[in-house]
Length: 313
Length: 294
Image (tube, rainbow over all chains, first blue to last red; front, side, top):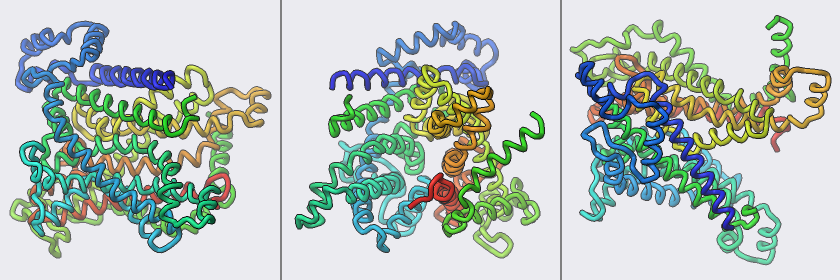
């Protein structure tokens, strides 16, 4: 087990290193001088040159890369071009909002996809199955921004049930926090739910055809008990594997959803930084998200090894 | 390359597509056929946009801003008085072209690398696979936004970003398809008679990889349309006055409560196109697999 964990962690560090190298090289290979971006739109040549020296952009690439990565090890993500604020501070400020959104969306996704996926698998071939599958295909194709805007249009602007936009921190007002998160979480949750439903349906219907399930049924166990006690464990394994992709997808989706509902999260910060060409911030957010995604993936790999001892070898 | 060689390869590819009555099987799937028809119709209509609409996409009549649907403007006008239907027709060209660019880029990036990884094996395979894994763990849209943040906004940058993000998927498919046939006797035979690695790749491995690649290309088109929509919606893709479906949608959001028609029209078009490419991919997978699906 220990070697399994260590190997996973090794791969994590390697991947993280690769992401950093790719991101860092992109800045310096692509057209557009970071110093020009940092100095601002009205800067003259002298200011740009001064900024370049000030930020250390005149030094060899290898030196810059070394400083950046050793900084990362000390959890120093560099400083923003915009006001010189540490990148990590800005990110942790925005983290609670994004985390609220991601967790709420995940909840919505599971609440929709588990009943729908299991239900369609159990009643395979029925009219409900067909409708469920059609809904799932539709859900996969619907863009996040369109779902969000339609929800705002119908539930907020026409019916007035919800507020269209806004965010309140959890500890300021828990009720308002939950109330304002309903629409964003529905938006982000439905597209992920669609994808999960397809996987759960496929996985459950595979397991239901196995011999031991038939044995359980022929012993006279009710179908609810068979599904809950016998099928769910084994059916969960393939679904857990795609869970990592879905977490990544949720994090990606926050960029759009935070923009629509004006939630002050990391996604919104990223889009703002792209417009102000705040390159350290953009790169910092990229690496931070990569860290989270990789960590989630390692946890999933570990849980997979824990669920099924054969994987550990 | 001489004419005979290219004609030979053409026949190889065509045989792969039609082997075992794949076209017939495709024809028997109503959803896939409907999807194909939709893609063809939308493409044709968008190409013919200048003939179909009397309005330009980039100039409006300021007296006619934010009108609702009417006989003159079936989908109304936008905030600077441009006809929304015309913007959508011209915008469809940008959206489709962008999706083709992104998909093409990921094919160029992914397929040769995948075939080389399968063929070379060893550390070359290990290195390429690690890079692909690294890119794939990352949320696609976020990576695209980060790449645009570094290179600056614009549709070409956006599509290169999308191409980079989806390259690993094609890499994986090409690699898997390559590995699947690598140990077949006819590959060993080709080596024995002295075929060059390039010839083996082009003549023997690529045709076998073609059907899974075609499926992946169709699915990548779907995600590229989605990504173009998202990026242009954020204002990071197409720059004004250029039009695209995502741009039309993003621009209409501030006036959405009074004028919902453009938002809904653009959103429905994007969703239908994405759905069509997905269904098309599924349809191809079910019809040109090596063995018939049960």
